Length: 337
Image (tube, rainbow, N blue to C red; front, side, top):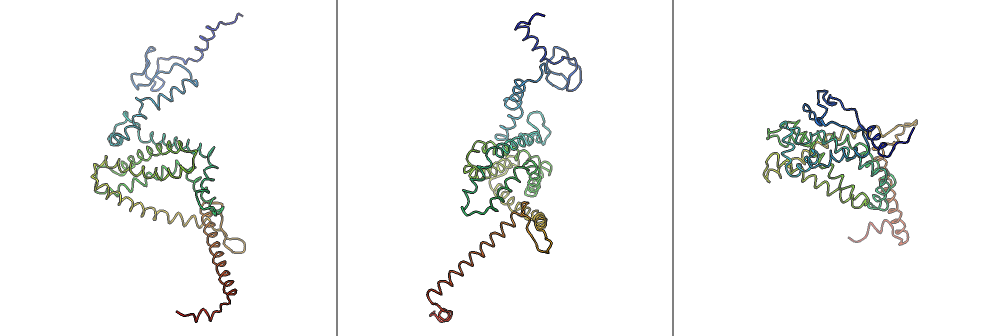
């Protein structure tokens, strides 16, 4: 058997990489002519080649970075015309911009990628920098507490995002009680877009400065302020608020947020404290520092013990000073006023 020429090998390889062409759309199973590239029923594109690294990357960039793509259009429009994106979705528009949950799914992907980078390569440096930022006498328990908080938030970022949005939607509905324009579900959609949008922005900013924990600490404050201003900007555009209304609604929102936070946190804290305290065989209560609340209790206990120790040292120092100066209690009592 003679060897194949280079051209023949190339042609054979090309044929092997091609998919079977059928006269049925793979998406909607309707008839599609063999020479048609797009289905006239669902608009699906006919794919001719099997997946390779090259066309996989081409598909990725085409879907996410094409100027005509819904993601890019949605991302840009949420800056320039948020009322067009959010209001359009609420009013039934689905093709022009990405739907709310699709945008939320992309935001979760961004945050998961950031956590992967942080946990995989920058976590130790980040926690070391946290110790440097704080007092040098910081205890090991406090370090463990900080790490537990960071890990808890990062590992449950998706759940945290999904739970916090209904919370904000409910508060928003209360704040805008005198505006009948949107119902509770529509308020949920507003914050689904807003929170997803700013999550992606904050992730990009944090990845850009992930090498510097000090900058990340400063950036966390900046991100919070920008998030606040962006939310106010979106609500102002959606509800067509005046600056006076913006100020009043913002203050009302913070008041509602404080009340809600206190009410919701009390039962959770009570249950957590109960689970963090165990009773040993002698009937004595012991703190289980294997969980988050246990670490808080242990840290508080250490702080109290440290204060008692410092007070004891002060008392010993005073007694030693009185002894050296031969000061008696009667002398202190009868000193001139």
